[in-house]
Length: 328
Ligand code: AVI
Image (cartoon, rainbow, N blue to C red; front, top):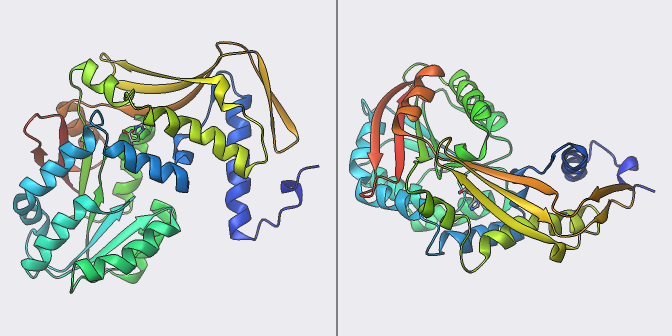
């Protein structure tokens, strides 16, 4: 019988497992089948994503790193605005490599700010709280572990200073476009006039370049996708045979949607948590992830449609990626 059926929902660690289980079951019982790419990032997934960022084909990280390293002063000066004290909040901070350029410059400029990285991973927050004050002496940091909007509310409750919110890496592209718009609207609601957002978005480009980034020769993206099935096996007592699923990435230059699927190579059954059986037909797919690519105009439109004013644009030399500054 299900161990989850008897789970104490007040136990925070179990609550996460129950939410994961419910999402997996809902997704795999849907037609067509789908899984949510936010679950890619367990410890293994984090490691695979790090590897991916170092792969020759995965360009978005390099592009945004170029922007942050080459245009640090311009970006920082735009964010400092009138020189008032502010909170620099980063949604999904990860290892904060890109923002470290900004933080270093802001410290040199003696800007009055606190860095509040928000991440869903406890490990990430513990790591940042421990390492950043060492690499960046004088940095005021308050790491917040939890969901973005919960933590934004918490950040607002501990400080009333102007807010600058970083949302980098084209993480916004991992939501279907309507969800991305809804997300920006919600973000705007959490901000006050004069607050700012710095949003990283991957731009439309040569379709071959995009597709190659999600179909790297080494097969890291494939393992990154299959890891979610392995995670379900590990955490939800399930029996996916990952050798019977193939990674299938696509890119549609018209819509800018880069999507990845796992294709079942056989008729097969998978049991989730020893209780729910999911049948797969040969060639049936699971929709795993969207990585939306945007036009520059679309970026502006999203800002305007969600209550922001676009005030700054920073590009890498190839113009493959944009970091846009929006004012609330
Ligand atoms: C985190 N996110 C912006 C990455 C992307 O490009 O969509 C995740 C990723 N998926 C496959 N490769 C990288």
